[in-house]
Image (tube, rainbow, N blue to C red; front, side):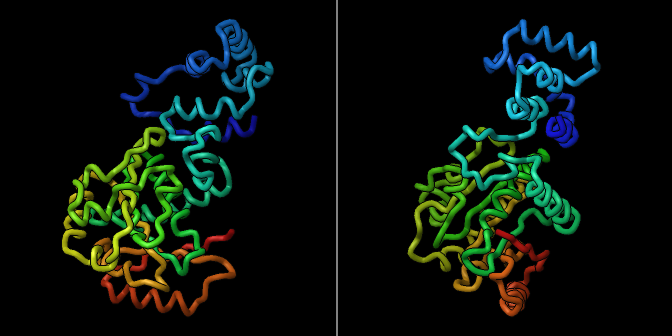
Length: 297
C-alpha cells in the first residue's frame, strides 16, 4: 500500500485538457486485459464500503499487485513511466523504470537545483555535462535528468556531442545511423536527426550519428551555434552530453555555445586537482560552472 500511496503523492494532476481525455483506472485495467468487468464491480463495492483508493481496494481483494497498477496510474496522470518489459531501453533509466526510488528522488533534487540556478533565466536553454574521466557516469546523469525534466511536461531535448564514444543511443535503444554529426556536416536535415520517444512524452534525443574523423573541428564550426539557436526556439530544456574532459578538448566549443556546464565526478575515482583543471578550462571557454555532481556506483 505504501508504494501506491507514494506514487499518488508524486503524480501531479493533469492539465484540464489532459483531464478531459483521461481514462479511469478501471477502464485502463480492462483495456489492458488485466481485469474483467466483474472484478471492477467488486473493487468499486469495496472502495465505496471502506473509503479506499481504487488501487488499494484491488490489492486488498488480491486481484492486483502494486507493480501492475503503477504503470497504469502513471498513464492516467500523464506521467512517463516504463515497465520492465519495455526492453528497448536500458535499465540505467531509473527515472523511467523506478521513478519512486531514492535514486530517482536524488535526480529530482538535482533537477530542482538546476531549475532554480540555471534554467530560471529564459536565456539559458542549454546546459552541457562534462565528465572527469570516462567512468563518471556522465551519460547516465544526462539521460536520467532528461527524463526527469520531461516528466515536468517540459519539452526536453538530449543531445549527444560525444563524437568519440557515444552512449545515449544505447541507453535509449535508438539507431545511431544518422544524427548530430551528420546534421553538422550537412549530410541530412536537423529535423531528420532528432528522434522522439513514443514511450516518454516530451523527450527527444539527438544521437551522434556516424562517428566523424574530425570531431573537434566539426563541433568548432559556426553551424553548431546556429543549430543550437534553432533548437532553443523549439525546446524548453536542452541537455548536452559531452566527451571525456580529461582526454579531449571537444567539449570547449560546446561549452562556449551552451554557456553553462555541470561537471560529473565519481566518488573515490575523481581527483580534486582535475576538478580545478577543468574549472579553469570552463572559465576559458567563457562558460559558467553551474555545479559539480558526485556520482556513486
